[in-house]
Amino acid sequence: MFSAAKKAYRNWTNQWLFQLRDAEPGEVFLKQRRVFIMPTKAGLAFGATLVVLFIGSVNYTLSLGFVLTFLIASCGVVDMHLTFRNMAHLYLRAGQALPVFAGEEAQFELHLINRYKYGRYAIWLGFIGDGIAPLEQAADIAPNATGAVNLHVASSQRGWLRAPRVRLQTRFPLGLLRAWSYWLPDAKALVYPYPEEYAPPLPMLGLESQDGQGQAGHEDFAGVRAYQAGDSMKQLAWRQIARIDVQDGGALVTKHFEGGAKSELRLDFAQLPRTMDLEMRLSRMTRWVLEAEQQGLPYSFRLGDTEFAAALGPAHQSACLRALALYEGH
Image 1 (tube, rainbow, N blue to C red):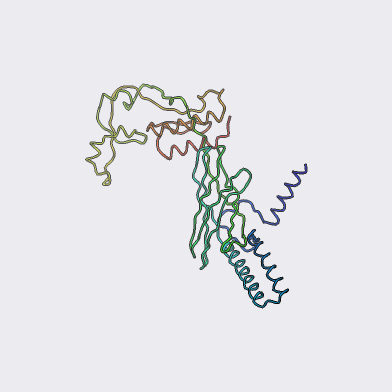
Image 2 (tube, one colour):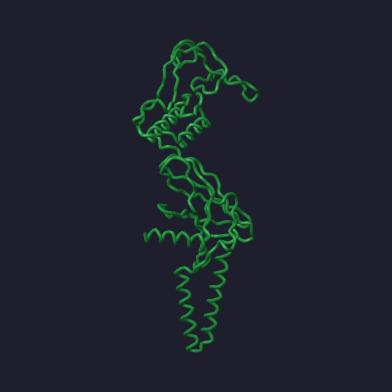
C-alpha cells in the first residue's frame, strides 16, 4: 500500500513539476517552461570551489582572488545560458516506424528541427520507462537545419507498439549543468507475429486444371500468353520478352502449358488444429506467408472475416501480415 501511494505521488509530481504530457501529434515546440536545468556533479564541485575561493579572498583580502573568483563565476553564468539555449526552442516531429516481427527491435525515427541561426550540439535522446534499456544517441543540428535520430525499443508481442517517452538532455558546452525535457511522440510501429521456426511444409492443394496453367505437366509446352498478376518468374518467356520493347507498350508474356494438375496454395487459419495456441497458429501462418513469397508461389489468404484472393508481391504480403498482427479472434 505504501509503495502504491509513493508511486501515485511520484506520478502526480512528474505530471505537475515536469509537465509530462500524453502523446503529442504533429510538430512539438520546446518552449522555455518545458526545459529544466540543474547542476551536474561537476557543477556542484565547481560551485563549492567558487565558495572556497570567495571565502579565502575575503579572509586574506586578495584583490586578485576576487578577480579570479568573479571571472570563474561569470564563466558559470555564461555556461548556464548556453546550456539552456542549446535545448530550448527546438521543434520536434515523429517520423516513420517500419513494421517488425515480435522479438525484434522496433525503430522510431525522430526529427529535431532548428529554426534559429545558431547550432545545437551534443543533444542526447533516449527512451525512458520501466524495462527499457537506457541507450541514448547524440545529435548535432546545424543552424536552420533538421537532424534525425533513430531510437530502438524491443518488441515482445504482436500488434501496435507505441513509442515510449523520450528524454532529451544536454550538458553542452562545459558540462557544469544539465538541461533536459520530456516528449511523448505520437508514433507507433506494427509488430507482426514471430514466424514459427520449424513450421510444416506449405499446404499445397492438388486440383484438376481447367485453364491449362497448372504447375504439373510442364513438359507439355503449348505456347505463350499475356502475363497475369501472380505468375511465377520462372514461367516468364524470356526469349520472347527479349524481343519486345516493354517501354514502348510491349506486354510481358508467360509460358503456357497444357494438361496436368493445378497446385493451389491456400493459407486458411481455420484449417489449423484448434488444439494449437492462438499465437502459435498465427506464427505458423506468418511463416507460411514468408515462405510462399520467397518461393514465388501465389497464395490465397483467409483469417476470420479477412480474405484475400491468390496473389503475390510486397503489397499482398504486407496485407496478410498486417491482418495477422491485428487479429483479435480466438
